[in-house]
Image 1: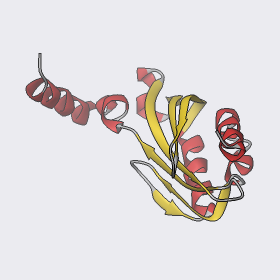
Image 2: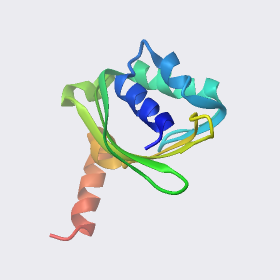
Image 3: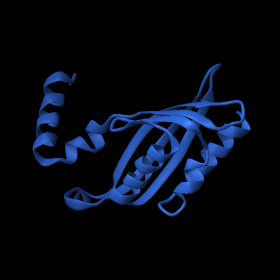
Amino acid sequence: MSQGLDHYVAVLNATNGANIDRLVACFSDDARFRDPFSDVRGKAKIRRVFEKTYDDVDDVVFQVTDQASGQDAHYLRWTFTCLPKGFLRRQGPLVIHGMAEIHLNDTGLVTAHLDYWDPAPGLYQRIPILGLALRKLRRQIGVR
């Protein structure tokens, strides 16, 4: 692995709402961050994505559980656990498993963090009407 990636993973694993600056410092000025809800460029917008995340949930634990490197990118398997605020809170902790494709520049800064995860099982299915529809659809489409 590269030193840049090792540093980024360590920072990701230690990030909380009070030290977002440390995470944002890992990105190049024109970096891209994409997940199922956001696709932004630049440190200011990346900061906002993380600030909003920490504003919307409590008790965040982000843990990189595995990593691999290819010729052009690095790949992180991760688990994100939190306690949602609002009406979703009563359903308990939310656990999301995902993958990230990470691109670094020559100085080890992140130029792209592209998250891949499915919001349906962990998030959408918690929303009363939408969750019911998704569960029914999965039963109809899925193999038993």
